[in-house]
Length: 230
Image (tube, rainbow, N blue to C red):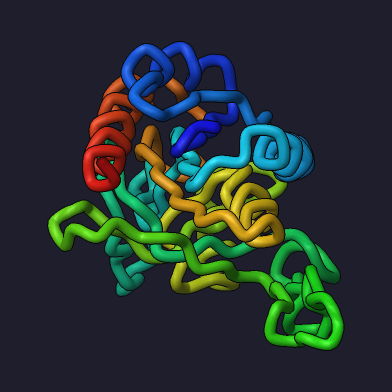
C-alpha cells in the first residue's frame, strides 16, 4: 500500500516524471487522458492501491495571455503561475457538464443538479462543479487559485476568453483534475493537484510550449510535497 499515489495523464508526462518521483513510498501510475478515462482509472487505482494521498501531476495551459497579443484592453490579469513554472491548485472546477455550449453554457450546479447528490441522509456530501484540493502545509510552496477542467482544450484565444468569462476565478485549464478529485472525494482520499504550465491556453503552436520546463517544475514541487509527509 503506497503512502502516495502519483497520477499522470499521458505517457509523455510519465516518461518525464516517473524517473524523478517513484520510490520512497510513492507509486507513479497513469490515470489516462481526459475526464472520462481519468475518473474511471483513478477510482480503480485508489480501490486497488489504497493510498493515503493522491497527487495528480502534469501540464496545463494558463489563462490571461493571448499568444497573438490581442488581449482585451483593460482585461484583469490572471494571478497564476507563469509558463514554465508550477503550482498547487486550491480548487478545481468543471466546465462542460450542464446545458448549452459557448456563451450559453450553464453549469450543472447552477441548474440545481449536483454532479454527485451525496448518500442519503447526508446532503452535505453533495459535489457540485467545484472541489477543494488538499494543500501543502508549507506556506512557501507555490499555490494558485482555481484550475478549470475541460472536456476539450481551448482551440484559440476566443475559447480561452470565453472560459475566463464563465469561470473568472480560473487561472489555468486541464482535462483531468476535476475527474481525479471527484474519484478521490468519493473514496475519502485527499487529493492534491500540481500542474506545470506548459503553454498559454488556446495556443496550439507547440514550438512556443515549454513542456520540459513545466514538467521539471512540477516534479520539483511534488518532491517538496513528498518531503513534507516524511
